Structure formats: structure tokens, C-alpha cells
Length: 627
Ligand code: G6P
Image 1 (cartoon, helix red, strand yellow):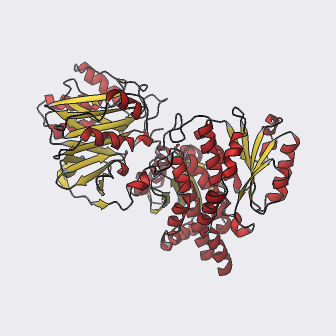
Image 2 (spheres, protein in one colour; image 1 turned 30 degrees about the vertical axis):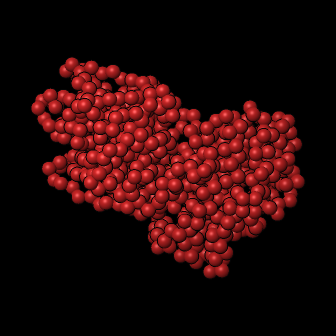
Image 3 (cartoon, helix red, strand yellow; image 1 turned 90 degrees about the vertical axis):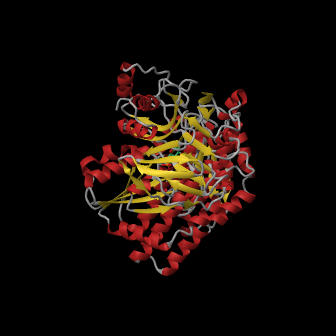
């Protein structure tokens, strides 16, 4: 790798070309606003008119920049615009490093999401040829490469193909040319790009569908190495490895509404998405049984099973693997996707099954782990994927896919998708139990009813029981650190609850095993040190009581998450968060789903108390598409 690390780039890209009298500046601005979850440290818009390109860009959040530069303000005669919201990788977030980037003649504009691994080499060659670079970005080599080929007499489209074929790395790239006001070119390799179309009028491209959903539901999903030539109200496709062959693509209709992707009256996406959990779970209960059975059968016949993911999806995997193992009778190895290759190396064997869990289906560490495994064992490995995004990169590498039904999740901190991932794994676990006949039908039914009641339990909690969360937050010392402790399956809940607080409220917390916390972490406990215990009445409960007493004896302030009927840990606690669910074994396995909304809300209100924006946590982005 020849690029520097230290900055991450996710980036949202948007393009529009029309033959209508519509305010394309305003539409482009709204487009990148809906993509802000992909990165938000700088942004820019370029529009074409009078045979020239006009650019407005700067570092900062979109709203701030818009206030200063009036990003929406371009004349109606302008029929083409590209817009970009950036997350820095190469070079800090500054005006010159913001996209779009231009060539020397200022006729070619490029926006890009991804990383060009060979950009230093290309930049050196181009500089020797006399090209002048203004920014530290890798992206800027693209307009200069295109310019190089146009100067050689090659036409615009062919010049783009030649330029892109020189680039090594990942890209979603969108390009326009001042002298070609009738076209936008979009190319994809490993970074998502979708094309939206209003037949005969307007064509859009974007990193994600919500960007153009207010205008059209009809879209094409670009695959790796595919290029789209956008004209007003039409689009042509070709494969850049075989550009002479025309490419036919399937037109998709998006069924979900834009409301699902917008805040719908809530102050933040995070809050809205927590309140959408009951709906997301109800939808996920509808995953076709045949899909669950396929996963169950593959897992049952597997020699070795791994589960891998990043961030919140990894903690969902930890909870889910607990439930699956319970009924499968085989151990599942959970490995963070970034460590997958290093940890397994030659130990990865034929006939293994890898379960990949990812909200976005685009997390680069996961994609790389999967690619490596496929490459190493060719066809003798099975990849099962659980993702929230149809057509995401991960689904293309997988043998079987289940799509969780959480709908679009915009808040950077994953909330509703966590619940649906755990539920999906639990539904697979029940199919395994049925398949292996380790439970009788009555017991399977009891577990199934418990899973089915998760939306009702969460709905009841959110409607009637949340009032003490704000109070708990207000009574937490603003500056203190704390622990989330648990045993057994609830360690995943402790880790995920803790991760949420770190992410959105910027507090240092540790989600840890309550038993293991005796071996070191307990030394931090002083009078008033807050400890949140996750305490469903499962087989670990009695021992957890002992742990609560140990921490209480050292002055710890005990806040516990318990079921409504709980008594023992309630009596030992300073505060309790009570979840309205029965206390029995069928319901204990659902506690990773039903206990988490309270902890998500606690993090949300802690963020507000610290004057932080929970939808845009510092240094984080929703989809991490670079290492
Ligand atoms: C980023 C996000 C996390 C997310 C993780 C994995 O770090 O900030 O919220 O859990 O990526 O994302 P995935 O889309 O693979 O679930």
C-alpha cells in the first residue's frame, strides 16, 4: 500500500442531469444532505453552464457551508451538477482537498468515493508531463489522467475508460466535462453507486438510493467495473473491461418510502431508529422460513463455523452465536473481521462455513476477509451473509444471503439493525433446533413465541417505561468513566451498550465480563463509580448477584437492567431499568434484543447532555470502506 493512513474516507456522491427547468443546485444539495451519514467533514458542488464549470466547495458541515456559500444557488439554465460530501483520507479536510477536483484546463470535474492505491505513482508521471496539482488527494489524478488522453485526441468517454483502467483501488467515480453538457459518466469498482431515472426527464446517480428517492423509485445498481453514461432521462451501460459490448441492466423499483430515510418528526435519526425497532423486528420475523432452513442445514453439516463482523455487527454476532450454539451443539468461532486472515491463516480449512454479519454489506475489512477466504479455498468454503442492504458488495461474494428488514439506517450509531441481526440469528437457531430435533415442538413454539413478542416488549418499554432513563443520565457524573458488566449471553449486551455510549456520548466505558472484571478492572472502583449490570434471570444470575455485591462493597453505584419481576439484584441496586418481560428460559434468550433499547436511549440522552450530536459522532462514519 502506498497511501498514507490516518484519515478515513467514506464520502457520499450525487449527480444530476436534466432537460427540465428544475433547481439542480438545490436538488444536489438535498441529495448530499441525505448522504451526510457517509462523511461530513467537507463538501462541494459543481454545475455546468455557459460552457464552463462553476464550483462551490469548502471544509465543514454541509449546513454551515451552505450558509456561507449558498451551495444551492445556480441558474436554471444549468442542467447538470455533481455534489460530494467528504470524509478525509488523503490530506486533511480543507477547501482544496474538498471535491469536486478539476484538471488543468478546469473543464473536467470529478467526485470520488474510495481509495486509489497507485495515485502517488500516477501523480509523479502526470507532474513530469506538466500537470499541476492543487490538493493532497488521490482523487485529483483522475481529472488529470482524463485530460492527458483528451489532449492525445481521444474522445471524452474513451478517455475516461483509459484513465479508469490506469487506476488501482476502490472507486465510485462520477465525472462531467464543460464541453459535454449532455452527459455525466459514472464508474464503479468496490464503492457503491446507484442510478435513478425519471424516464425522458432527469437522471441521477448517488452512493445510496435515499439521495434521489424523493424524485424517483426506479433505479439501476451499478456493479464492479461497470460504467453508466447518464443523459437527461436516459442511461447507457457498459463494462469497462469490455467497452464495445453494450450492457443490459435490470431496472429495479424501490418499495420503501423516503419517510423511512428521513427523520419523521424525531429530533435525531438515532432516536427515530430506536423507536423503529418494534417495526424492524416485526418485519424481520417475516424472513421466509425457507431461507432460515437453508442457513440451518448448511450450519448443521459444516465442519468448522466462523462468525465475523465489525463494530455493532460483531456484538450482534456474539449474542447470536450464543443462541445458535445452544441448539447447534457445535462451537462457533467469533473473530473480528479485521483479524480474520491474520488469526486463521493456514488454519482455515475446507468445508468451513463463515457467517458474515454487516448492516451495510460494504465494510472493507469484512469484504477483504471474505475475499481472502474465497481465494484461499476456492469453492470449498461456504459464505453465509446477513446484511441490511440488498445488492451490497458482501451479497455478491456470499453463497446464501439473508436480508434483515430494518429498512435504511441513517444514524451513524447502529441501533435497529443490531436488534434485527440478533433476531435473525435466533430464528436460524430455532430452525436448527427443529432440524436436529433437540427440542420438542412445544418448546420450539415457546421459544418462537418469545422471539415473536420482542417487538411488543420493546414497544411497551418505549411507550411506558423510559421516563427514568433521563433521570439516570442526569445523575451520572458528567466526567466519570464506568463499566457495563454481565455474564453469559449478556456480555454481548454489555459490550454493545458500552460501545453506544462511547460512540455518541464520548465517555470512556468498558463493556466487560462481570466475572473477569475481578482480575484488574475492579481496582478502578471508588465511592460513587457507576457500574451498569445487565441482569436477566438466566443461569448466570446467582453468580452475577455475587459480582454485584463485590462492586457494591467497594462503593460502586449500581444501576441494573432487569426484568420487571426482579427482586434480588433490584434490592442491591441504586437504580434499575426494568424491562417488561416474563422471567423464564424462553424469554432469557431474547434479552440481547429486549434489553438493548434502554442502553441505546441512555447513550442518546447522555450525548444530548454533553451537547453532542448523536447522529454525527466525532471521528466516526457509518460505513467504513477503507482499512
Ligand atoms: C462502523 C460504524 C458502526 C458499525 C461498523 C460495522 O464502524 O460506525 O456503527 O457497527 O462500522 O458496520 P457494518 O455496516 O459492517 O455493520
